[in-house]
Image (cartoon, rainbow, N blue to C red; front, side, top):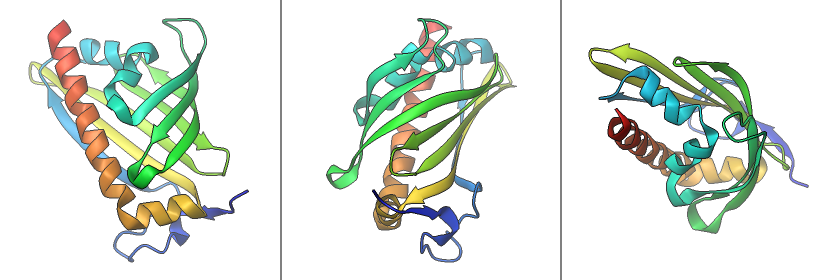
Length: 169
C-alpha cells in the first residue's frame, strides 16, 4: 500500500505548492445555454461522465438512473498511469452547484466543485479541483506533468459540456 502524502508536501515549487484543500486547478468557461440546460448535463451522472471523453471509463454508478450519487471510475492518465476512483456527490444545489469527492484506495482524495451561474443570455461554469491528500505516486505524477495533463482534460470536458448543453438549448 502506498503512503499518503499531504498535498502541501508534494515537493512542488513554492509558487505551485497548494495548501491542503487549496485549489489544485480552477477553470471557467462561458456557455451559450441557460444554467438549467448546463446543469441538466452536469447533474445527471449518466450524462456527466461522457464529458471526460476517453480519459474516464465508468465501471459502476451508484443509485437509480436520474438519481445517481457516485460510482466507480477508471482513470486513464499520462504515461500509462491507471487509477480506480470511488466518487461520491456530497452537495447538490440544482442549477447552481454540484460538488463531490474522488478517492483512490491508495489514499489520494480530490474535491471537485462545479458552479453554474447566469451570464448574459448564457451561463458561466466554474470548475475547481482541490486535493486533500495525494499518494506518493500521484504526487510524483503531478510534479512530472500530471497537472498540465489534467488541465487539458478538464478544458476538453468544459468544451464537451458547452457543446452538449448548447445542442439541447
